[in-house]
Length: 139
Image 1 (cartoon, one colour):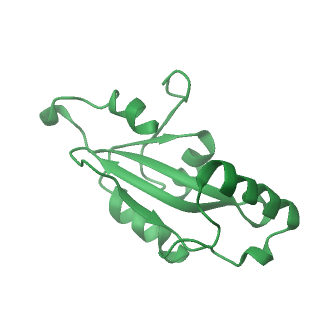
Image 2 (cartoon, one colour):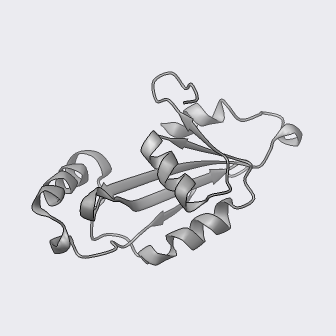
Image 3 (tube, one colour):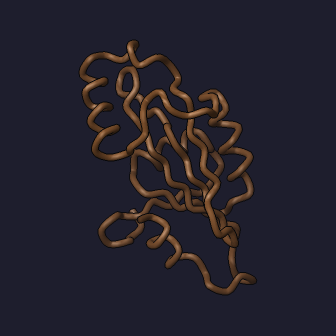
């Protein structure tokens, strides 16, 4: 869904294109409501397929409070289709992966305020643009 919105914002002339990326983040709720990244898909200008990483959980399911387990179980069944325990990329590699893939990008397109704020905290020097889901307007 985000790719079709974001591509409309990217220049069609490659010589006029700045280094841009579309980043789609899928997450769960962790301990104390923290944002727990489960999957990231990164598509940069000129790529035909995104690079996708699925991350192993940062801690066991049993460590989550019961309310958090219920919320994440609903997300597993009805939204993501990903399981808390799925993923092969170690969770501690998130920062290194995002830095290496996005450090040269002048613009990064991300949908959702929470996702933008999480990524902005992680990649402090990168420019982020959030897209409003309904209108495609920048927030």
